[in-house]
Length: 153
Image 1 (cartoon, rainbow, N blue to C red):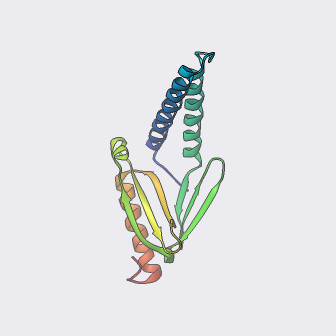
Image 2: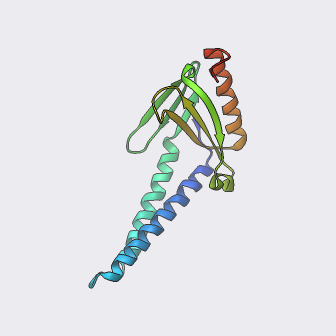
Image 3: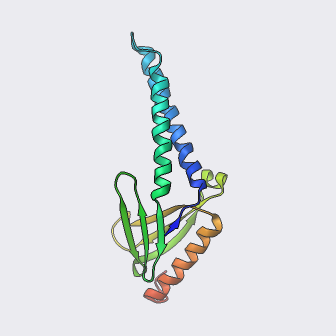
């Protein structure tokens, strides 16, 4: 099973810090309007949200994996709900490599696999190096073409 690049933990932890700051700020604003609200509540909200968010980011990293199998792409992820996804190569429509501004900042990329089927039937593999994302994109493209013929991708 292939693991994501360890730097994805930094990205997910930064999102947890941002979420904790927003929740702490909102509770601080709320406490300004409350008459007898203890002054420590905003700090406690921030601390609990930060600890929970960082712990969740670390768990999420440990539980995220993918594997290119003989006839399909297999993904396993999820902290509270374990999700196992199998994408047969014959269902792959096209494959993209994406790098948002925050991903570029930490030197990461994602591979997005679009599949035939219902709306939202795409799969995203985050936390790859740009080279790893490009290699995975090309590999999946070749395997999809081989599975379906030259018109698959």
